[in-house]
Length: 208
Image 1 (spheres, rainbow, N blue to C red):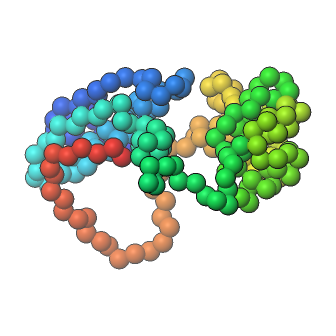
Image 2 (cartoon, rainbow, N blue to C red; image 1 turned 180 degrees about the horizontal axis):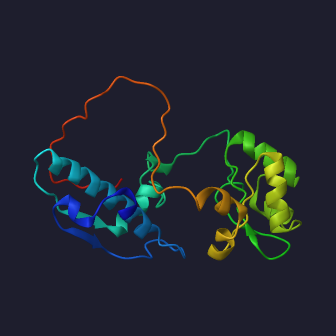
């Protein structure tokens, strides 16, 4: 929180984290990352409340529910219609959705093109049907870097899976992410001053 001028003590109470990664099967600490961001935001709001004369706040974050902050439907249990997952009759297959495919050089890509227009463009690039076996065979004909570059030219997403070190060495990270501030305020237009709404703090549970 130092990067935005905050300290743990600014909330005026204790901070508690419950649970630990891995909450989901990933080499990245997804629950921890989401939890840190949510707690930092909570500290900021609690500090504002104290500046207005309110008491300090105790903050508790359960890492076991933190992934909902990143993807509310990742556990595939809550978004149901009459007990069944919601599907679009115009977009029945998701072979070009959230799936990884092995390439000719034994790397992996995720052809993330689930929407109808993107899906058609991706099928044209790969020359394949919208079923898993067909996409897998088509992706196997490409190297990962070549397919990623071809996807960029075609206007579709064909991202190559990278290690952390590879991502840190990439042009995208060096030109965009590495120099970006932790928090940026961008003025998008003029407006009359608006008072900050007063909020009554109560004990509550939230997932994002």
